[in-house]
Length: 417
Ligand code: UD1
Image (cartoon, rainbow, N blue to C red; front, side, top):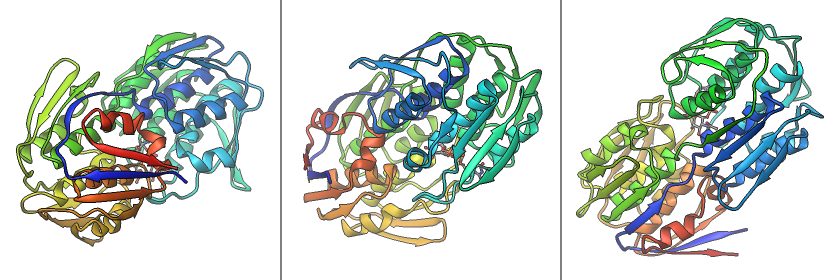
């Protein structure tokens, strides 16, 4: 099992090119199921989750080609088997994103229930409620969702809570439904907007993506399109956090600063100097950051996917901070591992109190989920001595060329077989 060896204790300094967004690429790849036309994507990140999605779509008969440079073409001439098996869904919850497109295109789908995961229960009831409102007959047996419909019909759907993949699944299904669908309390995440833009390029009629009310007028068929995947705002924030925690300097290129307002605001509060250009972000942190409180919330609030990384910054900050996790009930898995590195953190329910320490010390720690792993990398980069992070396959799910990018910032990071 691969491990990462980090020799920490030095400020990061340099430039990093941001990759395409994992959480935009995955739903956009699923949009290929909605048409027999060719979907031509650029800026697709090379990640384990993208490979898993390609495998899942490939098993259904989608033809997929990719080059080494982020270009991917997908063509679903015919869908042989509208089935998402447990073995793949288990490794990647985002597989649920095939449900809406499959039932809209094929009139039937069989998709494994995702089950629990490290960061909480994560049910899919809102996905199912929305599809049922569009006339899909649903049943669950032997761990599989069975969906059937002749043609979906537009509906007004009020979501009980803000769900990102739920909004995306229903938006894709509604694109081919008969009549108009209105999604209320929709997720406003930039990745939802990126998917909507791709669907619009394919001929879908969608208004309001990026607001909490999305209106989709169904069309009879969609066509192929060319679409660049948006930059990854969580990867961007992770490198900013690494630079901030280490008292360093970083320039990110190929970024989308407009999607990071809440995160950038918190880094400013922590004392960083930040300068944004059209697609660049520069951050400089002189000395230790100041402790900053934060509460996670749906976009445009502070992203739950940045909570663990920011906790690593607060762990070495001047002062005490309070971090409240409002999206997932079990998303403090990194705390025990950060404590092994010398962090002073206590948890009460969904709140963590982080007392900043001057120094962390290297140790062996274990990655538990994708963003928790990223927080351990950041902590390892600022810790004195050597940190070994075990189970780094989690990182490979969501960070492209992590070691190379960190090496470009002067970090000593090495993968151990
Ligand atoms: C997406 C992101 C993930 C991010 C999360 C929150 C992708 C592929 N993944 O996950 O990285 O951490 O948004 O920003 O884009 N919920 C229900 N019922 C549902 C759906 C969700 O109760 O049917 C709850 C969840 O348990 C959670 C909250 O709603 O408490 C938000 O989850 P959701 O936005 O759906 O997360 P994902 O879309 O799975």
